[in-house]
Length: 381
Image (cartoon, rainbow, N blue to C red; front, side, top):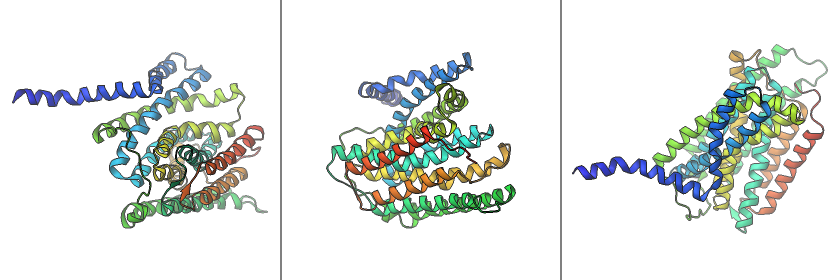
């Protein structure tokens, strides 16, 4: 009786070891995991080498994103694509939330708002477009649940309208006082959080049958055990948060040294780095013909940022910020968010995806990125 017990106690550790070895063998990018302790040591030894810390933290996030992707795929296979997409969006947005909290505490409201707007546009155009493109290159036509796509797009549209209102009232002949804008933003933040909570109740509880996946997943890849996946999700999420803090502390000085403006850094660089984990999962899911999961991650993450992360930052700013943050964005950011939302709605309305739909979404994202790079907002609020 003793030998079986000994085998049971040894099996989990040996299983973890085999998983790690197999993953590094099949995904060499995981070898970059050594940059995680490297960037932590560099931050201790050379805290003023901002450009070096910036580049090292970006590299360190890549293998963490890959691990997060694999673990989330395993959990999504057990829970379904709707819950899996929500889980990945939540964990992926944790990076964005950590980055924004650090910038909020430092009073860098332009960076916070640019990263929020950029995350919404990046998820709805770059991530969704990349999923359509990569999935379409492997599969001629892919089908997905139109109800889920429309639902996420409607939530996102509602949130962009809520952001549009404070921005519009600042353009009237007699702009309201700052305290009025702060009160309006506070009320809208509470409303958006309530709408998001009810939306989760609707999609995951009362009408979850409407959000069932119609994709036909390929089972050519062995998934991790559920317990191991959850453990890796927790550990990797903590490491991502740690590396993100180093990234935030170095991004501004590094951006100036590299000739990038604060608006471009927040809208493009921070958004892409913050969404690295989600993109890895969304792209691999699309290649595996699980486009429902990809759309759930892309649009679900964008909706979560607009309906939950941004309102939470407004509430938290009353406690950790120099002054309360408002939902008043500069006009260019609001325009890009609305256009991105409408584009995502049109591209996902048919329930079928092909590679050229991804090309159009990526082209629109490139237009926005190039515009911000050469002509950043001159008077953001």
